[in-house]
Image (cartoon, rainbow, N blue to C red; front, side):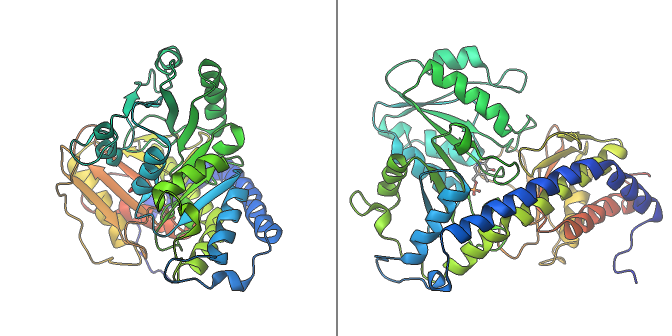
Length: 419
Ligand SMILES: *Cc1c(COP(=O)(O)O)cnc(C)c1O
């Protein structure tokens, strides 16, 4: 029985692409297996019980489920303590909590991985919005050289007693530079710590969680931070964010999350706990599905003659792939194909639109159970040079592969692709 109509020639290409992916798939499965063991043993060691699923209301004092969940995250991600809250409205909100929690007037932070993610620009520089700059906190970005950290420039930039934070973004975001592996981060951290041992290392870990056996906190990062509608929510958590790292720093962040004084002792978990537990439990497998989808997409599109980032057989540091489709029509067709192959809102037809923070129109495809969740298969593309689509997610490989094939078939149907 056939549920989807794909050209035989496309199916043949897909078969070839899967053949190319074999080795990478094996590596991804080995990592997923390792991380599943890591997560399961954290549940066992922390003695999770169904009583921990029962949330609290009001202030949320003595919320056992919340405290246990934070213990589990600290264990899985190799930190001393954690904040894991559904009340973080987004990844950006969670990162902002770290920046404002740890920096004071007169302090300086240095981002060593070039411009940070778009949504942080207002947090850092937004005039009159209560940005870091409004509070007299400076945030310097050091441009990359050859897609890597400019170590000599960074070593100069981080000198000085006022430098309190060295900030890294692990994932590529909407750029074509590589995402940085934990190994790359490890060497960078060692080198930069030598130049300034007092500044703490903060890593925007979005999209990188559970993609490798180690997390940045296990190789010298003081704080990692990310969103629960990406990897560590496993496609199940309804919203939220996490911060993991050194206990003293987590405490400072907690005073920004709630209030100086109450910190992490309050924050009712309401009815969100079970899904957050189930989400982190399922996360290694969701990440496995997303990574395989991403590798398959890049193998297929390399076969079809497109430039893909990273190359299908490159070691993965996050779940994102970027495919240079070359033109507006191609981007639109691809996104429409992803949307049409999604479980939710498959009948919606994505249109390019204006987005705050973008100087061009953007088209997005997202047919997800959780609004905006990008651990579920999703694609977005700014309609400008280099005319690339960014694809991420796929709760399991089967569904991810169908989505990618549907996107490709749509391009074929519109005569934008010959195979
Ligand atoms: C997703 C993401 C963020 C945070 O984004 P939100 O949309 O606010 O959740 C920050 N940095 C990177 C690299 C991201 O991928």
